[in-house]
Length: 121
Image (cartoon, rainbow, N blue to C red; front, side, top):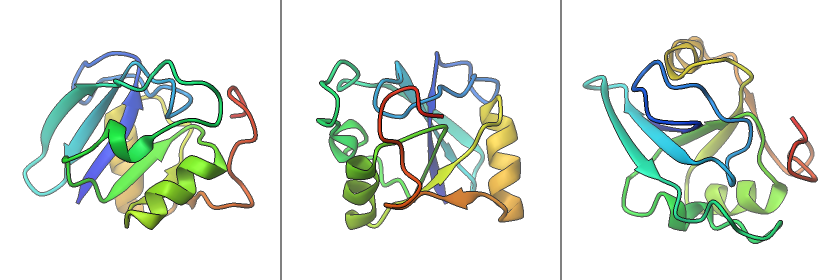
């Protein structure tokens, strides 16, 4: 499974999780099969509210899951339409998030529990 996590800056598994997907400076993609870590800058970081293009931000990376502190309903729906599940987490690091998703206890985001504004988490 390939997991995309918004982070403050790339520090591999020790990267600190950023609170909101769309405005994150970068993303870490963790592959659970080979434990590899890949980082990419968020080219869509400075978008107007409601204009997040999450599929464009991770285009070509074959992500299965996005785990974030917060994400708006439109972005959740766009990712879901692309076959990507979205989960909410308040954990501190990429390593913590990867360990928690393996336990299967994270809350999946949907139209009823997505953010209504930046800073909602």
